[in-house]
Image (cartoon, rainbow, N blue to C red; front, side, top):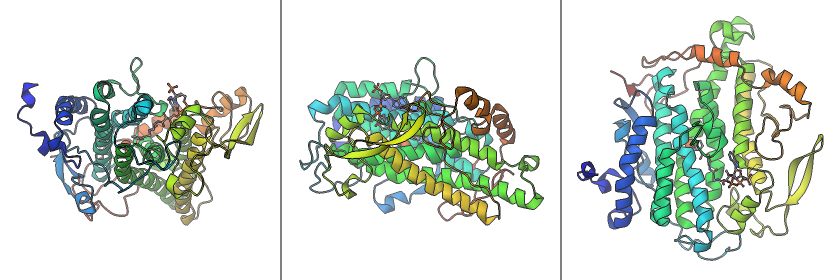
Length: 475
Ligand code: BYC
Ligand code: FE
Ligand code: FE
């Protein structure tokens, strides 16, 4: 403890939550911050902690505050606490408390539920950093290295965002939960992260790009739903986090685009589908990775029919995507919603009570958004004159949560026997040979402006810098 005395936390932690005046919060953070740093050094990016990285740091919530780019060593990154500006006169937009002034404090009756939601959200943030910690060693370029580190420090900041809420609004149990967030570990047998996808491995950069496309996008949809919350501090925190999330999905989408582009270039050049011979990643392998990351991310929305989801909504804690833009009663007690279900051996669509179907509705919004990204990848393929299409797998494919868990559904949505599914598994999901092949390509490329052979360079650099800028100083 004594070693922290010299640290001026108000200076170290950029914030717009009046940290200077909030002594209780400041004391809680003084305790937590050194533990966070210990966690970061132990579980954050492996091997680059002492290097200068060209990073964007949020120093305020306005546009100016966003433009702050400089070289920084990651442990010295200024993880801040930012809430989007308050909306004057904001009222609870949905559920039983609709129309009341938005809550500035946690309502006693919903305390446990709200804490659980915040902890679940918070848990994913450090988990993703843990999953990605080894990837720096095999970066395809300095540009990509800088991008993954930008994502990592921002996920660290997202953890801060949830820890701020726990410390500021949940007293002693909030502080205990904040400790636990640093104790669980992705993939640990005894003390794993809470949600499935965050205990999977991210063994290579294709997995990372797919993760940032599919799994960070679950983040977008969950945060957008929490941004509608009647609990105003949660709403404002999530609104600011969403501005960072956009960059993560950019990294994912453009990363996959560049892998696809490289495959297509070599297919054209050598008039062959077998681009592995030329050191690229072939489209069928990309499709299998896509199938895996999409299905694992679909699980993150929970069960199709969920009383939890109904309760979150009725209690005005978690809304729908773009709740305030919807033109209905925002109570949904009598409404229905079509849900894709498994009925014996068939996939059917049934009208279900809209409240219990809220997870599925959010999943629908998510799938539509994913499809738009896949369409852009397909445009790249088409522009090379190649007659192949990447596809999202059917929502029932390879699921472990909800009513498709344990069912044998093909990527095109047919129910088959276990034997057939297992016999064809290797057509649909990354095989060990795929993973070994992709792993074999993962040799680091660290000269400025150089890129691994399996990925095309980006169209432009970061913050107006050239592509061959020294985004990370390794010397
Ligand atoms: N894995 O009624 P059910 C992000 C549990 S990503 C394991 O089906 P519910 C990010 C569930 O917890 C966004 N367990 O679902 C991305 C429940 O357990 P309890 C993260 C699962 O509760 C990349 C039980 O099954 N944010 O930010 O309606 C990088 C029955 O639940 C899973 C959030 O998730 C699973 N996949 O909805 C960095 C938002 N799915 O309570 C960051 C907060 C369900 O019976 N969380 N279960 O013990 C929520 O809104 C909800 O907890 C969920 C589940 C949507 C996750
Ligand atoms: Fe995040
Ligand atoms: Fe993210």
